[in-house]
Every structure is written in C-alpha cells, then in structure tokens.
Length: 509
Image (cartoon, rainbow, N blue to C red):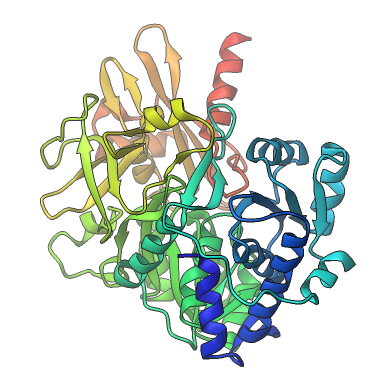
C-alpha cells in the first residue's frame, strides 16, 4: 500500500477538513494538501524521477515537509529523511550513499548543503519560489501503486559506532506500524491533532500516517521544534493534541508546567520513547499532568513497533506490581513477537537478562546496500536489537541497557540504568549517566556523571549513601563527576560515548 493512497482517500472523503497548521493558523485543507502533493509528484516525474528512486529531505519541521513527503510517495519513490541538525557534510554522505535523485531542504540547510554537494544533486528549498511553482503545477490523478515489499522510507541510523546505516523501511512495515498504533498505543479521531515538536525526520514524522488515515490535523509549532512553554500555550487553543516526545522533552515539559501552574490542558496523548524514562520522572509527570502518557519501545530497524505500555498502565497505582510494570516498556505490540535470548540465540527463562530480539511485520527489510550488516542484525528472521532486557511471566519487557553499555566489573555485570534510577531519587539530581571506566584490577569501574537542578547541589557522600541503601555494594559508583549539563545528541539522548571518551582521554594523558 502506497502511503499516498491514504492521503488521496482522506482528501476525497473529507476535502474541507483542516489538514496542515502552523501554530494555530491553518495552511491547507485535506483537498489542498493532497492536490499540492500530487502536483509536486508530477513535477518530480517531469524531472525523470519515479518509482524506486530516492528523494532526500534535509529540513527542519515545516508544513511543506509533509507536502514534499507525500509528493515523493505519490510517484512511488522512497523518502530519505535527514535530521536538519546534522552537519551538511554528514547529510551529503547520506545523500550520496542513498543515491538520492533530488533533495528538499529549508533555506538554511539548502545554503549549507549547496557547496558541499557541488551541483551533483539538485537542492530545492521548501521556502523558495521553485517549490512554490511545483505545488501549483498540474497534479497527478492517482498515486503510483506500491506493494508491501517496496521501499518507502530510507532512515539512516545515528552512526554511534561508525558510518550510519540506511534502514530500509517498506510500505508493509509502515502499514503494520500504523495499524498496530490504533490497537496498542492510541486511537485517533478526526478532531484530533498531531503536534510535531520532535524532528519529523524521525519518530515524530512516522506518526503522521495514523492522523492522515483518520483526517486529523497536523500542527507544526511556529518555533519549528520543541519549546515547552509554546506547547503549553497553543495546546488548549488547538485541542485534543497528541505528540511524540523523548524522555528529556517530557522532563522539560513537566518542569515548564509546574512553573506555569499548568496541567497540560489541550494535550490528549504524549507518547514517549527514545531513551530511558526514569521512574521518578514519569511518576512526577503523571502527578503534574495526569493520565496523558503512553510508552512505546522501538528502533529504526523496527520503527515505533516493538512494545507498548498504554496510558492506563502508566497511570495505574493499584495493581500489586504496578511499579514493576511502570518501569517496563510494556508488552509486545500486536504484529510482532518478542523474546529474550542468550548469545547463541536460545530463549532464556522469564526473569533472566539477555538480548531483546523481535520478529514480525514491522521489522525492516534490511540495511541499504549492506548485506553483511543485515546478516549480522537479522538472524533466522529475528532482529537482534542490541538492547539487554528481561521479560516477566506476564510478558512485560524491562530494558536494562544497550549491550555495549553494560559494565563488567570483577566479572559481574552492572546495568547502568539500575544505578541511575537510584541516583535520580536524590532531590537535587536532574540528570545522571553511569558509564564504565577501564581499570587494571577490576576490568571496569563505575563512574557516575551528575547534573543537578539549577540552584541545587548534591554531595558525593549523599549519593553514595543512597546507593548503599538501595543496591549491592559492588554496583555503586567509585567516582561521581558533577557537570552543569550532560552532553546530548540532536535527539536529546545523553551521549555516553562522549563521557567514555572523556575518561579515556584523561587516562591516556
């Protein structure tokens, strides 16, 4: 199923329904949205671009982003979304590797990219006259038919262990993800709205499909990104707003709500994923903003689609194991199977820690032009996620850490998240990251990097006492490092690689 067919159907069913909004201002109805996409597709066809070709998007969040995206799909081409916060040279590598025939960009990204690609590929600004003319062209009547195995979305991983890999997401993957959302995550009604505060090139953008299917509204904040105060201001005006947010964004939204005396009115659903959501943070989020939160667990290789913890279970406080479930990432979504296995791929008994593997309709086709990496990651039909976790008797999966983050000290495995959860209970601690430092005697020792709330401070002795009270002595940090802020990537994830490099460089010096 071509995703553009969903837009085409919705535009015929409810042509006058509001579709694209910038802040609270309507930019297009569904009829206009579909017509613009079809016209963009026609122009791309005139440039010799067609089914199976790749077209990149290197832009900040804009309503035109969605029009370009559906224009790409209208002709059966595949979209290559690139985070606008990346350096132009990083983007250029992805463009070259994907063989993109053309790039849509915002003004800033287009200007940065032009000298780097040096005329090897056309770059069209979503804010320029050329794009405006594309939207005004003669539209194609129907989207090009696509099959389940056809490539729709070529997503490049963050590349923390080398060059990014292109994840091939098919029409079938997107269909299963979208339908599973309605069953496992949330319902969508025509009066609802999806707010794009996180990058549309990633998880936030993937949630457009469900809202296109249902004829709901698509809102890009005037800021073009995440601004907690802005969201709390416009959500009551727009009403029935859903959004995807990384845990760090949820933390900032809750902090802003407390300052403003807000309970999150106008926000219907906040889906959080993309990093560890610590117990203290989600408990406070529900206390301040109510039952608006849903957790999902996914990867680029299985987009948004491994497990889910629905809002009633995030807010549940009566079940005898509610705390355990709150600290989990939920149970397997409807269209996949999830298991915990050892290094040989043998499924482990419930409660034991191993690598999380998943199989099903949402799992990627493979890595773009990289059969070796594909064979290493997908074995016998199972995607090896690289995440360590355990599953209880009821099927709830609890993440431990990425396999590369596990600290082995004196032959014992230490899972950083377990230590981080304890340290975050200190009232002065805002963020924490636990990593391993090489040690000649123990192999590795535990080091905790801590950032405190503004105007507050914590003492190492206090944090050590917390750990000794809550976890085994061998797990407690041997050293506490206090920083004003912890380093993060473009998606708000704490960069433990940077922290390890800091320790390694000190050791080398």
